[in-house]
Length: 177
Image (cartoon, rainbow, N blue to C red):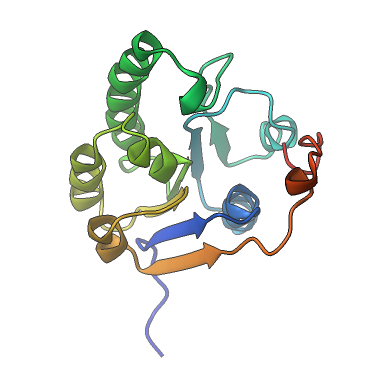
């Protein structure tokens, strides 16, 4: 059996519910084991219910994003340009901050942000290639491309079979956000 070591790259992707939930669960597990965790959520405001409890857990640092966020298809071209500049800078800041101060970095919806053209994939790949060897990185979002998948040690695809949204039901606080 090989010795335990940190430093793997995880991707939780697909069209099903559960990507963020899975990533947050891994953050809780790592913090419970005494690991230092840094979380940044792309394309989400600061209103998700899990944020309230995560802020109180020792070992977890939760960075704030935009106060109000919307889906990319709802954004004006000016808002998209603003996000591209902001997210590019934020990604570099988060990786620098993670450096040697954290054991696990969770980049929620970073894959979606790349897919929507609001973050350059090359920048994300460069950050992954230069990350400290022992830094565990967890990423979520839909449809990662092959270059990103090649960087991952774990890839889990969530597949939607049925979802209440298909019947016109809105997201529910405490379940979907």
